[in-house]
Every structure is written in structure tokens, then in C-alpha cells.
Picture 1 (cartoon, rainbow, N blue to C red):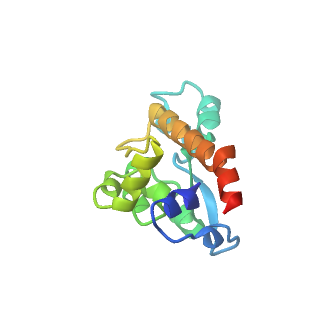
Picture 2 (tube, rainbow, N blue to C red):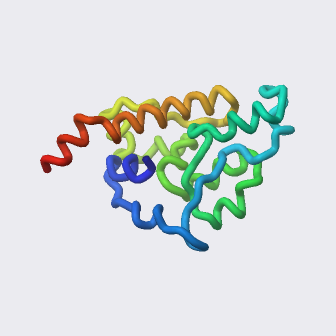
Length: 151
């Protein structure tokens, strides 16, 4: 999904880089650190928080080294650091939408509900979940796959 958003925004594919494993590879990061105590305003039980935290809308693909350095922070300080990462991570920050004509064209053409998130609460994760679902529907739509197979 990360590579799709980037290439549709006019950037070069980095799929091979993203698929790399090992010390210099990428991994899935949870936007929320594993601290249920930071979310007691929305989750009564740690198990409810843990289940919600693992939903795809709360995940990003990031370099392993980034995750090791910033993964345990709260969302607010991590958000600025996401600007130096891939487009899906950057899309959490409003600056990504300011001077990025390729990304804006992709959003307008695709109709996908990308938006920045100043905070990342349960409702924000739900919105991000919907974005990822709709992004996946576009990527793996039968019509798009048939068209690309003909090319």
C-alpha cells in the first residue's frame, strides 16, 4: 500500500527497499506504543486496547532503526518524525498536504480519504482503518488488475 500511494503520487517505486529484511530492513510499527495506561480515557481494559492497537489502521511500514528509536514515544512527538519517512507515514502530518502536488493529484483522482491527524485517538484509528481498507480495494480491484495485465 505504501509503494502504491507513492508511485501513484509520481514518486519512484521503493518496493524492493520496503521488502528488505534484516538490520537495514523495514518492519511494521504500531502508531500507538504498547502502553495501555496512556489510553485509559478510551479503553477500560488493557486487552481492549491491545486488540484495537493491532488493527491495520494503527500500523505503518518504517525502517527497523526508526522503530527502535521512536517506537515507544507517544504519538505527538513521533508525528513530526514521520515527515522523514514514506508517504503513508508522512500523510499523518498536515505539512504533507501543503506542497505536494503529486500526492494531492493522487488524492483527488482516487477519492481516498487521506487526512492529517493532529492526535491519534480511537476515532482517528477508525478513520485510518477506513482509508487503508479503501486503498486496498483500489490496489486489488479486479478492474485495475485486469487493466494492468493487458498492459
